[in-house]
Image 1 (tube, rainbow, N blue to C red):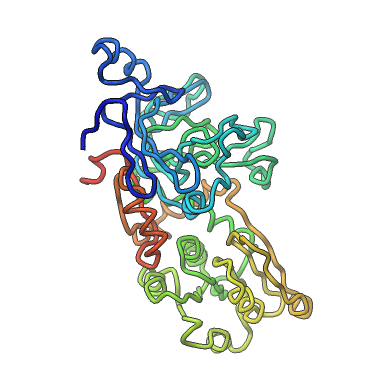
Image 2: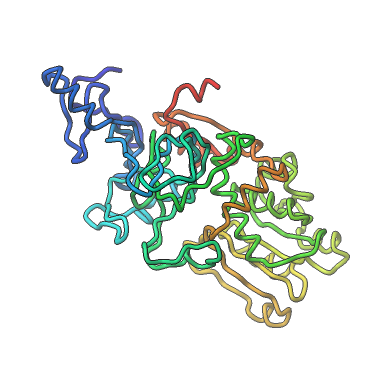
Amino acid sequence: MRMPAGQFTTGPNHVVWASVNTVTDPWMRTVPASTHRSERHNHAKELHPMKAARFYDRNDIRIEDIPAPEAAAGEVLVKVAWCGICGTDLHEYLDGPIFCPQHGHPHPISGEDSPVTLGHEFSGVVEALGEGVDDLEVGDHVVVEPYIIRDDVYTGPDSKDYHLSKDMNFIGLAGRGGGLSEKVAVKRRWVHKIPNNIPLDEAALIEPLSVGYHAVERAGEFEEGAFALVTGAGPIGLLTSAVLKAKGAKVIISELSPLRRQKALDSGVADYAFSPAEVDVLAEIHKLTDGRGADIAFECTSVQPALDLILDALKPTGKVVIVSIWGKPASLDVQKVVLKELDIRGTIAYVNSHPETIKLVESGKIDLKPFITGKIAVEDLIDKGFDTLINHNETAVKILVTTDPERLAE
């Protein structure tokens, strides 16, 4: 519907679309259609407006026209192809601000507060290069490692802890643009070129796949054929399982949802998938391992019974990696940890993980296509994206979003 100039129309769940007859400037002022035509044209030309999904507050995400960025020195301007909806985005919408800085409280590194552009799982094409960037070309396909990190933190190829640095946050959550927009300017360090044999839609899953890669890396070395237990077959559980399979593990998934269990089996990332509501998963694991127990385990649910299962299912000297984000304290039977000499490790995001993750996809060892369960326009972000993932999450793994209608027609 075409609205009167300078007005907004509020859709369901407080999503707001800027009128097609308005242009928004950096201070969120609008230039009404009644402005003199040449003046309005010059204003729009100067600002290069683009569409973006903006987080204002809990239950308040707006689709607006904002100024498009340009590539400053040392930056790469990326024209976004596809952006995935992450569970973190859903938490911001339902319970935020969490990672997103509250209005009036700028993030200490980005200097931005809400509203901020969302989206941190994205792929795109290089549109322009800032001064000093000479190892990429316009037209290259890329993905982004979406960190916001202080300039004095060492982020070289041998760093194992830059992701744990003070005030670390993410592009698409704490400022510096985001993938739920037409374009984003990113520091060269965080841009990773991908080969053309990886489709751009699948490439949008490299960021969450890197989470799984780092989680598996945190478990340390394991022999081919080692049994790995993964609790939870949501997006991260499935992608962690994909990395485990690519590295030669036998994967056992514990998951209540029959649809998710079937997705794990159909996609080939699980050898076995059990429902704890239907079978004794611990007994099944003991059968498969001749009573020894699983070698490694990955907790991807943030649910107490899953953690309890892992402590029982691991063999002595086994390793557990806690991948999920827990919103409340968990209880831990420390005596089991002591008597079995279990090794419990945490993991968060990724650190120098993208290059190796990209190689796994390029080699064909991981097929990301089965995990793309929907593609939508940014205007449908809430009704067809967030609503599906919040209220019908069994039916979807990863929903991709684009601002480009032509990509939906591909």
